[in-house]
Length: 188
Image 1: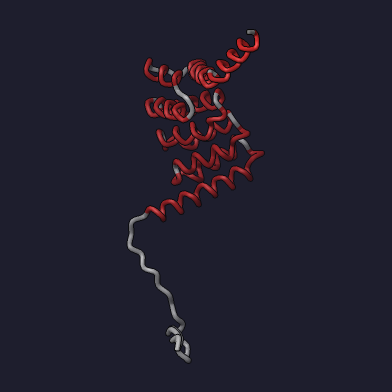
Image 2: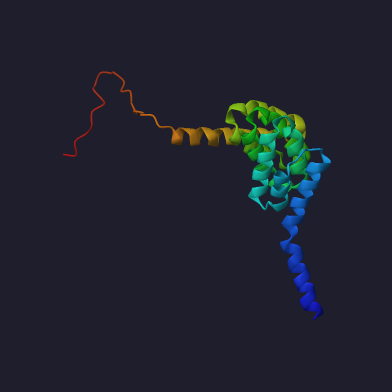
């Protein structure tokens, strides 16, 4: 009986780990003085996984001037979600991208590279400002931050080129030297 009760208690504790994390995020937001509506409070409290980032993005969109403090509190409470929270927040308030990134990196410096990559992917036009903000927040990780930003910019450029809908024609230049060239050989 004791084994069954212990197993049940352990299962409940493991299953409710995310709920405790979301309650911690809610408490962190409230402690930081973030004004939340009842709907926002319920969204954060009920959020699981990626839904937490979406809930934070909704709060940032409604209160962009407080984006940095919102993200700092959320990332400090849920560091495993730091990159997702940052990307969602930057998408919700791109004008605040550098401040959001600095706040997230300050709250979870061990995840500085992932945070920077997520922020640059969400707002590639602000890559330089995002990278500078991240390096300022975690100078010891400047190399990893710069590499992550460069990779994110490269991935974004490749994605943009792949989804671009323009007609492109490949052209090749044949040098004009004596002896011909530019022709194709016959298989005869």
